Image (cartoon, rainbow, N blue to C red):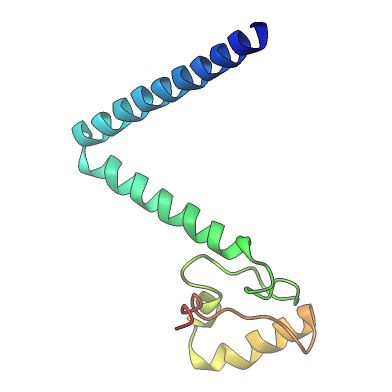
Length: 115
């Protein structure tokens, strides 16, 4: 009888945790709906950054992180290194070769999903 009471008590605690979580999430959602546009945009951008980093770091072999190279920025990769005029392209590549060696990883854009 005691093990049954402990099990029921544990299940009730789990239910109370879920109820508290749902109450908290509903308060958060309602405050978002009442919030201004800037708050909603900032939360959206923060979530994009979080999911971008999560996708980037989740499968290191898929993203070739076992090969040395510059750290990519989510959703842009290393393309920001190449935004300078074309005269600076070869010096940038030469500096990357000196730093990371002749074989290096360079992300231009996020990887497209396989069909």
